[in-house]
Amino acid sequence: MKPVNHVSGTFLEEMRKAVDENLTNDQFGVEELARIIGMSRSQLHRKLNVATGQSVSQFIREYRLQQAMALLKEGRLTAAQVSDQTGFGSATYFNKCFNDYYGFPPGEAKKMAEDPAAPTAVNPNGQLFPRSARASLFLKLAAASALLSVLAMIYYYKFSRAGESLAMREKSIAILPFKNLSQDQRNEYFSDGVIEAIRTNLSHVRDLRVISRTSVEQYRKTEKPAREIARELGVSTLLEGSVQRVHNKVRIDVQLVDGTTEEQMWAESYDRELADVFSIQTEIAQRVVNELNATMSAEERTRLSKTETENPRAYDLYLKGIYEYRTYTNKGAHAAIELLSEAIALDPNYARAYAFLANSYIGLATVWGAELSAREVFEKGKPLLDKALALNPELEEAHMLMGFCKLYNDWDFKGAEKEYRLAIASDHPDALAMYADYLNFVGRHKEAMAYAERLNEREPYYPNSRIVYSYVYNGRLEDALAFSESRLKLFSNYNTMDAHGFLLLNMKRYDDAILYFNKAMALEGIRYPRMLAWMGAAYAR
Image 1 (cartoon, rainbow, N blue to C red):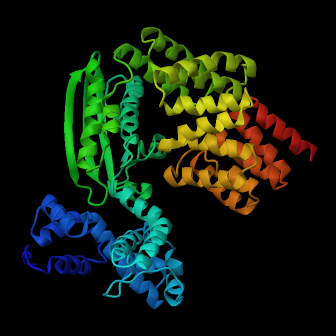
Image 2 (image 1 turned 120 degrees about the horizontal axis):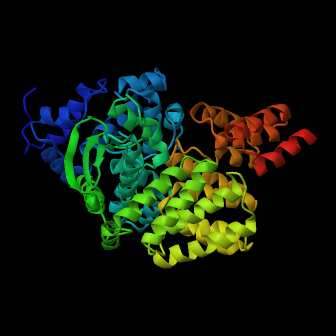
């Protein structure tokens, strides 16, 4: 195909024509479209952004969705067939994109098209506007009519969340587990720590959606292509890399990959002294923000450049402590307490180390053996959290755990909720989970369900999902069973068996509940107090 005349009035028509001619090709993306149009990727992006405010990948996806709507309205093809016809490749990915774009699943498209009361907006060419475009259209008309101004407000409040969701996916990233290339495989804790620091830095940029550690862990040894991983996680980009550490030297290689085209967007190698690891992590985070054109406030820029400790040895001990804690074992909790205590001794101003030390004590009291009494854990943990918040008043982990202390030690319900609300400001997954627990605890089960779903939407592979408990408390036992059984295929750990046993108990399947509680306790030989109570209830029933 001949290159397009860039300055002609048919630029957008030629763009649509190029996508249409490759509609069934799920490999067709930004690179291929730029080649047909006769521009570089960056030139094409700038020209299209000026004309429509869209990125190129967004333009391609929205055109595919518009054609999908037309096919679905005809009623001749199934959603899966339409997915293939419009180049989505994955029916699951198609369903997600379609629902986010139009506000209803593909299966309801024909019904919505036939319903004159359906909330749709149509452009002069007869195509449905996406939600974000509807809001824009009505706002322009508002200048000429007070009535349309009211309508614009209605559309904004009704549809802004979906438009925001669409934009967020254009600035979204998953940081895959970095390869540990060190000769000493025990240095894996260090490579994991580098990732976590980059992820933490990026998670504070509100214009960027960052997938959590728990959701990407499944890809540690995967052979799946980048395109497939990006689709499964619903992100536009992936950050891949490797870490090699030899004594006080460190080499970090990173590359940012387009999740649609699998094209390398940026790559860099860092050969530095170990003490420079803090600046490396900051540089990588800043470069990712720039490459994704994410907007940052002055406060976010300042926060991104801050380091939590200047002491490399304290940082190393902290990373080892977190690595041990996340084995989620009794032994790991004890090791974490020792390592984090050493880190604090080297740097008494290390706020996050104080918070995770408190978390380790709480773990020993609540789950991993219950070897500390409630009084002991609060006496140990509360001063650590006070110190963490004095050093860093915005630390999500500290607010989350302070909420736990206020609830279960002080019985200060309002104070606990205030702390939880501060902790979930950046959608911290652990904080969302604990806030859902709080809401169920106080009987606000519908609200708990909303936060459990919010957690599941943002972190679909979070290993300790609160969906099962919330389904049970809302009387949706069959939904809970379907979700729980799917979870057990992904994770066979304390968390999934605990939730599944609780569900079976409430379904009056007492023998099955006892079986799963015993399975969970056999994992480490620990008789968990909560499970013992539920087993007692099952035996009694």
